[in-house]
Length: 172
Image (cartoon, rainbow, N blue to C red; front, top):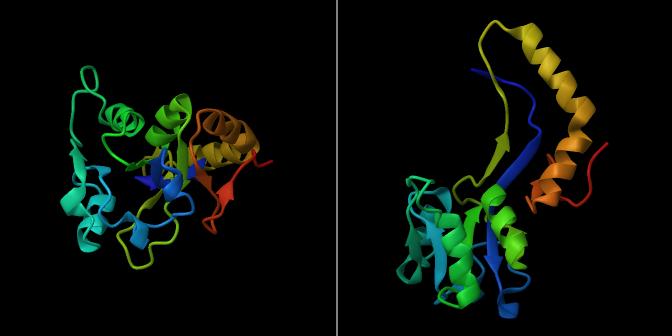
């Protein structure tokens, strides 16, 4: 599939209630050593955490679940609130939604040089040879980018521009 232009870029983020973790924007920060950190098993942050020696204290949450009955992201946020874990590393759109409802801070992990890729663009898939449809979608996205941003920001989804800078208000 070809991809149409992205309406948002997202990445894995750190969520915590602990003031001692303020200012941490990467998993390599030494203040995370020995902390109980939630992570979705089998995701890029879990690999990075293992490489950095953080996995022995990690609390894994399942990647593959039937969402009708289980919500690992929601459980991770509840565990942060209860103090069972001190922080969690979760995909931005999921973290943003649950953490904003819980009043927790969501911090994009921007400073992990050489770590597994954690930033992914949210895109539309377009079948090959449907260039007119792709151009139409790209035009629509460009025209309505601010509307997409508004909705995503209202749900607490952290957005990044092409230079990995945090977007705090809708683009025009």
